[in-house]
Length: 485
Picture 1: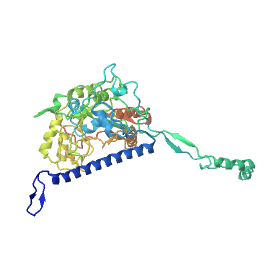
Picture 2: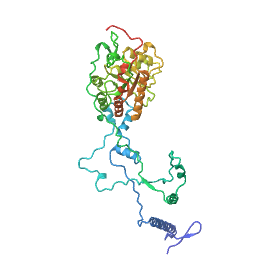
Picture 3: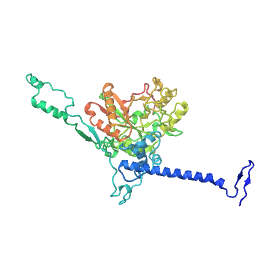
Picture 4: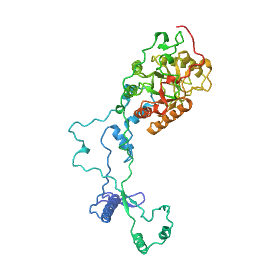
């Protein structure tokens, strides 16, 4: 028999059996087991009550949610970010918005920045979601719309010319009085209407370049440039005024009867040379009176400008400059900036001028931060000494010694790329031409711009206005330079 051992307090405990230590452990384990049994029973009782309430014999609850459609990165992005029933943004629109911030990217550089298209299934291969026998995703339920009864609809009585019939209309017959309570007792009719979903109209397909017809054969402009109107620079050949006073904005211009007093509108297509499909469409599908302006960042710029002149178009160069959106909208390494000195800006201007040949002038932004900068008069003076035409933003006061040939201030017709907006701007330019005798419109090479321009130009002459090249609207410099060739 075990001998009890005394503790310092005088008490005795049984050290052989260890019952005093195991008793609280056992009680705790029993309490936890009982709590688990109660929780399990309460859970099943709750599920049973829910099943009885819902009328279902099953005690399980399932929640299902449609997954995004299978496809490439574009499909996943549009399915997760586009609300159900809304039209997903077109990938080319998303790419255009991103490329607007880097206008100097050409086709090859832009293609490397675009995501790879999703792989198409091979012939005979059926995707999992397209397999036969699978149920289609249920369409949203129709919405019941309460329709007003015929009696509640307000009616405007038509004026009657028969004075004798008026008293009869005020005194209804007995049959009408008997039918009135019966009609009022009928419940209102219900009409089922489908939910309205935002989608493109089937008759409003966006235009494509391929849908536009070619303009047809036209007489080419004379080949250039003339060696006597070129000078060497550290970047290449740049235009200068000839020894007999020949200037590029006159020598390389498309012929036009300037003496004709008919109101005229000049159309300039800008940002050309960066997208092959757009540039080819502009050269081949627009009338030769349209002036084409090419980006200095375009690859094969000489070939593009030569091809445009072969189609009868006079050509210009886009001049990158700092705009109010800078630096978020970066105009590129050739851009003229207000933070640069006059010599640095003149050096960048020389780089731009060396990029092309046989052009009539420069197409500057409509709004630029350099318009009121101290460097602007020197820039315009350099343009004048080169014998070039200027289109774009200008300072309020230009000294005559720095004033080049100037075109009227233009209107950007596709500032919002919608057909109605473009039509309204073209109509405004036409009205301006009737009032002042001349107007200038600038467009960018998009399918909708070309479509609306061709639609407007088709009947322009019948309305008493003619389409003219930009050089036909230019105002010569106050003091034309002279010299001997």
